[in-house]
Image 1 (tube, helix red, strand yellow):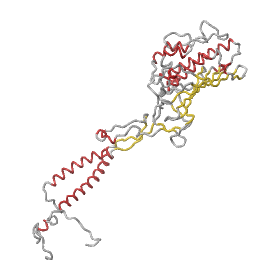
Image 2 (spheres, rainbow, N blue to C red):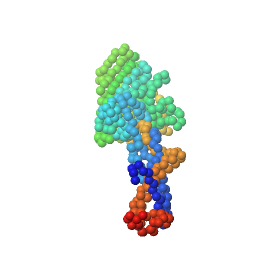
Image 3 (tube, rainbow, N blue to C red):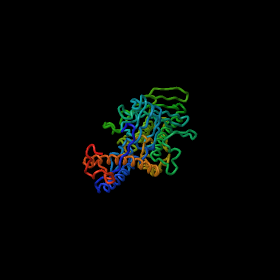
Image 4 (cartoon, rainbow, N blue to C red):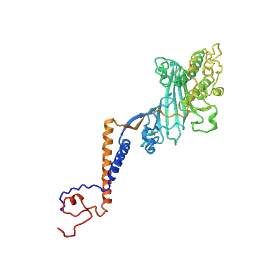
Amino acid sequence: MGYFDLVYPLTRTFPWRWIGPLSYAGAFIVIAFLGVINAVLVGYETVTVFQNDFRVTQDLWHHKYMPYRAAKPGTLCSPHLYNVGDTFTTTNEVFAWTIQSIRTANAGSFGLSYEGDALRDCDVQGIYMTGDLRISSIEFSVMVNCTQGSKFDATATTTFKMTSLPGTLAPLLGITRQLADEDNRKNKLSVVLDRLIRTASEDLGDRISTAYVNSKGTRPVLFSIVANTHTPCPASSTDPACSQPPKFDIVGAAQIDSTGALNQESSVILDDVLTAPLLNLIQAVYAAVRIDLGIDSANNFILHKDVMPKTLNATFPVTAVTPANKDNVGIQAHLYSAWLDPSKPDSQQNYTFLLDLLPIEVGGPATLRVVYLCQFQQRKTPGSLFISVLVATLSMFTSGWAVYILLLGVFLRKHPDSNVCEGHIINSAYPPSGHYLPKGSP
């Protein structure tokens, strides 16, 4: 036989009668098994979905039988990338934060990769505020620092304004300033914190205004201060000082009087008129920001009213420019009285609406509210599923069937009669099965 001759196999029947039914029965079982396996292997396609939880998992029917195929938490979604200047909110959705610096980049040379970790190492670093009596507004900026070595190693700031001017758009707190009266869209946490900071701002504004009027216009009309926290107290801290009333260091102060003269002497600026209501306002902003970060500390007067006497000033000092009066304007701290008992009538505002929004609760360190891109498995359409499973099953089965027949043939050829074709013996002059022609016979 030459190299280029065509050959064809002869069809032979296995001598065992039981081999046929057994093989076909086994083939049916194997095909059914391969169909199920291929429904798992090729019956799904990868799709991109949006998820809020980085550690989301997907539960499919075959995971019960193939647990090793179940995706582990954190493997289905891509991390969210942040750069300097990007904004974010926490899961409490009170303040909008902007990243100011990234100390340790973990995504390239400048980026920060976020994988849903809780903000356990973040706390308020400094509070900046500037109040202007001429426009009845106080502008705030708060810096939050996440300690070096944490998974979110960055600093971020939020800026918002409290104003009595209706023509000034004051961003935050949250989305509630415009939506507070809309059903099903009210963020009660933001409403409460907004009201408390606003009340503390009004306390300060009333006192400065009263002092300005009684001084016949000689008191300052603008102040600006920077207050740094004395002791950082992130959620992960075990420092005993973090259970004491919060303390602040005034590291910068300035004021401008009605003539435009600038004064930066802190000892003069922080007098009996300004200090007490200013500290109340700082405490309110500090407590609100820490709630947004999910820090449930024992010294937070918003969460624990029992610390209010040690944290807030219930009244402000009587001075020559802030004298006692029947309405206690500039003397009473409405922040203190309103939060101590919102149901009690107040001469300035009605705070009873807060009762419907209480209690305020913190469920632990907050995470960032992020939408992640995740790769999920989705079952193919019926037609595509049928074709995919059919092709995969037949290709696997035919290969296995060929190997099976080959192995049976190898086993059968070990018998001395395996190379005798019985059909040719019956219809020819060849000797019967088991007899061979002598070598050289015609």
